[in-house]
Length: 294
Image (cartoon, rainbow, N blue to C red; front, side, top):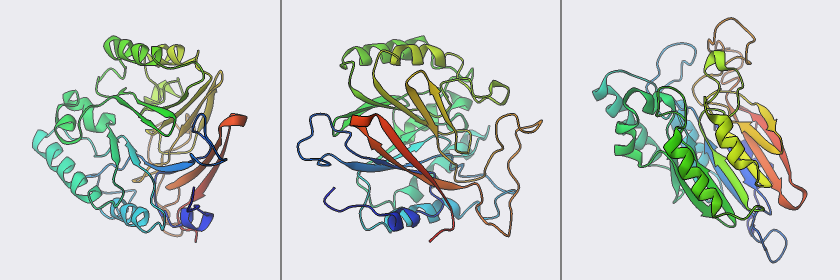
């Protein structure tokens, strides 16, 4: 990049769910680094959540927006990977929360912001309200030689992608060469991380099977509110920390209860990550940075 992003700039992202720095991802790039770019991933904002464990429930998202806007070099795009709002069975309240969320993130300076639903946003009404505010729940786009695929594994209350969307995925992948640079964005993990806590996708294995023939695939997801790294064959899966509350490690306690707030260490468990990707080496350098540094 002409304007490089240094560590101090990343450290300004106080409370952001994830920062992804994609280096040398463009196929057929000319000069070294000419197609470098970075984008910001935020996840699990849960706007509308109140009470323990986050005493700053109404401030965290706004602080994240301000932090991203403070970067001297803006990301080329931002993607929210689900649970924009906190679940409610009240249709009017769901709509109000989405309006409020939309208004808050409209303050972002970056020109391109993309959204995906989480089960809190979409499962109560199969994504009907979400689509009114943020458009389709699954889609693709291309950026500097990288093919991005957003998969909806949350609108169906059964926590599955569904046959129709799997056919859509297969048709899209059929257009890509086997060495294409592919980034998959989901909310739930596609693999069985811990199904007892809803940390899985019932037909996620079918999506992974479709992706397996492609050499360069990486999956970024949310939902579990913590850092986790997993491999299915050569496909790497990386989860983002959340913006509202942290969750315990899979199966580490009987119930999936939020990690208590520690007043001595505010925002502990909430944070962001820096990911540097070197396509020729097929390697990713991932650095998790806690909130509060800098």
